Length: 172
Ligand SMILES: Nc1ncnc2c1ncn2[C@@H]1O[C@H](COP(=O)(O)OP(=O)(O)O)[C@@H](O)[C@H]1O
Ligand SMILES: O=C(O)C1=C[C@@H](OP(=O)(O)O)[C@@H](O)[C@H](O)C1
Ligand SMILES: [Mg+2]
Figure 1 (cartoon, helix red, strand yellow):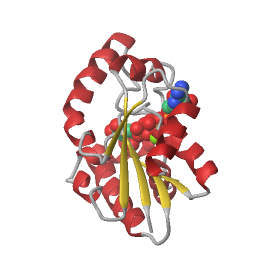
Figure 2 (cartoon, rainbow, N blue to C red; figure 1 turned 90 degrees about the vertical axis):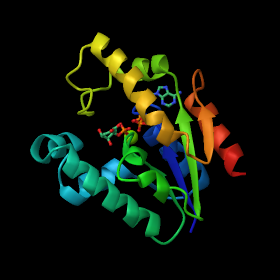
Figure 3 (tube, rainbow, N blue to C red; figure 1 turned 120 degrees about the horizontal axis):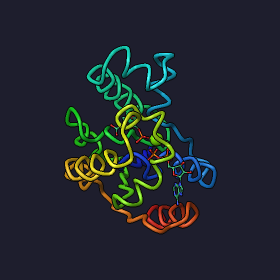
Figure 4 (tube, rainbow, N blue to C red; figure 1 turned 60 degrees about the horizontal axis):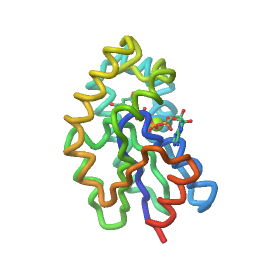
């Protein structure tokens, strides 16, 4: 029951790459945010708006634990904040877990997020300038947790196919 876990900042490609990886390996993919949405019947935006971030972080940990303990192999795409709260990073050090940090620079993340922020409540209402500064500070704060991953993969300038292949090489 191997769990392949992708982590990293919003926009680094966890959901996109995990999905591709799943198609190639035929290992089922579960996106943590999607599981939370299904469990609550609310979107991530609605959870943040109606219940607040602390409630979201509680749910996020519960669902993460359920997925890690589920039977069978699985590729799990975390949310950007998942390893950074409630000691969740310790859960990623389990025996049957391969954790991979998709590491990107602020410029790459900004480029991807600038046109893709509406479903991400932490940045949805920021101007472009505010967002760049926010990403820089936030990424710095979170890097401690991201860097505890078993593997760190630099993804700047890589296509989706290249990043997917790099992960297949790690898993080989
Ligand atoms: N080379 C690339 N690798 C991964 N995603 C890319 C790449 N180029 C553009 N993108 C886009 O960046 C966005 C990444 O978003 P997503 O997969 O939701 O990231 P995350 O789940 O880490 O927040 C997607 O819209 C994806 O199509
Ligand atoms: O970085 C974060 O704290 C968050 C990242 C999001 O996931 P993605 O990284 O898939 O966008 C989602 O879990 C929520 O909006 C909070
Ligand atoms: Mg995602």
